[in-house]
Amino acid sequence: MTGVPTAALKKWEKVRQFALALPGASEEFPWGETVVKVNKKIFVFLGVTDGSSPLGVGAKLTGAQAHAHALSSPGAAPSGYGLGAAGWVRVPLDRKGAPSAAVLCDWVEESYRVVATRRLIAELDACRASSG
Image 1: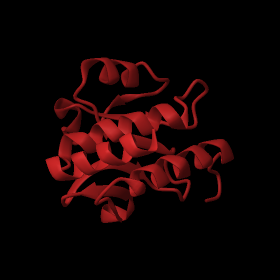
Image 2: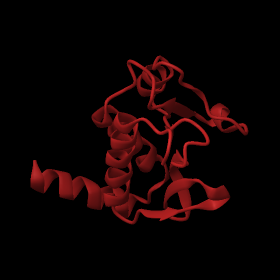
Image 3: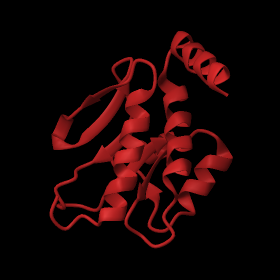
Image 4: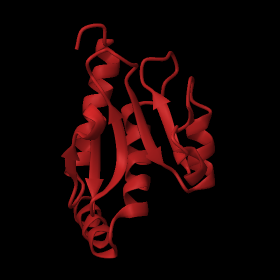
């Protein structure tokens, strides 16, 4: 993890842990990058932590407000490989003014809700209701 800013790495790890705590979530490493899936579908791209590219979070944001907010983040852009057209946004973590881990986790949850089954979403909502 040489060359990776400590603050960005801490934020990345908080987002990773949040994503993995969602019902049915699992971590995989296709193409050498970290992704988190539910129902065999990716709901967050976390990239690589080896310093070969800037740390970032990619999420599918179908809500207009969250999508616009994400794109207003410093260095944010529609995700590559045609994913941007489907609402995917990549947000770098090492830029001044980058979103907080809490905001990123909100976006990860929105992305999760897009691909998770109704049963898993109900499980998440029940967990949130009992803890809040």
